[in-house]
Image (cartoon, rainbow over all chains, first blue to last red; front, side):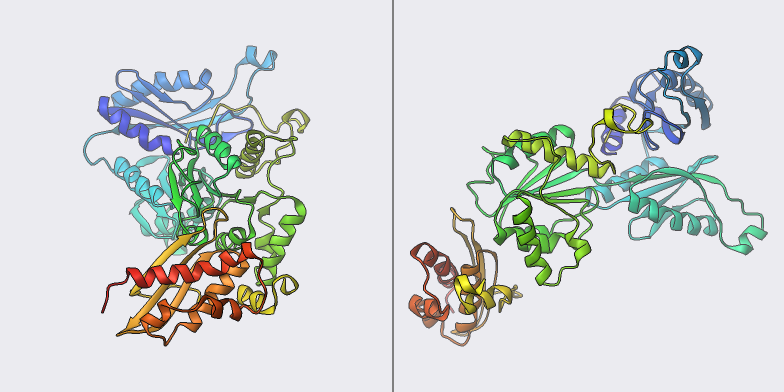
Length: 378
Length: 124
């Protein structure tokens, strides 16, 4: 959700107040997932979208004006598509809930402060979850990845329950609406309810760490940047990890690769791809990476070579479940031959793994899987 | 592995000695072989004129790692001068194998790095 922060800053240059629309619930097939945001300024300026851009977005824009007038949040529930669209088979078919709320962009509005705080965590490589009650979105509890929290939903029992529910969502990187289950019997006896809250998970931007600065890395660096990854290139040789070869990489790190990887923050949104094709780097780097939370680890090489490298680590005592995380041979089976084709197959596999998909052809997938969605923001 | 390079290199690659870092080293230097990518850093602690501790870090081939492992053990207790003049032949002999010429460079890298570290370190 990197766009949330950059969009807030951009909006703040020209708007004093906006209506913030957040997709907080989906049922059935919908073009976007929970957490998608749209902003409508007082002058009607629109940023982002909660659906593909037709039906619901139009209603959200319309209702934004009344939210800004009244200053009160609204929860919109809508079915996607109309009868005509259904007849033509064009409808998405799902239902969605959108939380619309007015947001002051100046000063120290609490929700704005929460987003600034989230930006600090995410920039440091840590996830965070913003929990807000649907009926009272002005109250916010920010749950950090280490289990600590800031702010309050109004009482300690709700806060404790929300913290417990937020942590597995943070681990999965999933935003959703849930009823907060107040476990404390005394609080329930006092009439504390189990209100619905939106758990909005923010994770660090997708980060690709390339170990080895050869031609496949050069191609993968460019492709990954296009898709929105932050790219770090690591190589022991200064002549290889150069700006001439990697003009658009975010960071070039020359040094002892395993030492560099030990000091990077590797989280589920991090992909580590070893293109260096040399055991002397692969073994120590994998040793450093496999005990981390990196979401994707892959290395160039055929099956035999991969087995030999993993066997070296196995002999050192690296557990099998860690070794099984390594994608080798790397990439999807598309018959890639050139560096650019190999990079494409690797990037496709990285995205598939991130989304929990197999990478198989959509045409061959069972019906109901993989509706074509608008590109995800952030 | 030991069939290719001998038991000493295999042992020191699998279980390298003195791998790590020192707190506030008195001498340190890092170098890379620009072609093969072997990269080694050596850190030394000096007390007066003596080397009292030595560590290495690096991602390097078996020969270079074994060489660094052996060298960092052999220089402890030497004077700064003797460490600087550590004979290459003694290091190669400690590897207990005959290296083809291209691999001798790998064995020499830790020695070059250590000499550079001692040269760069301020005189006491």
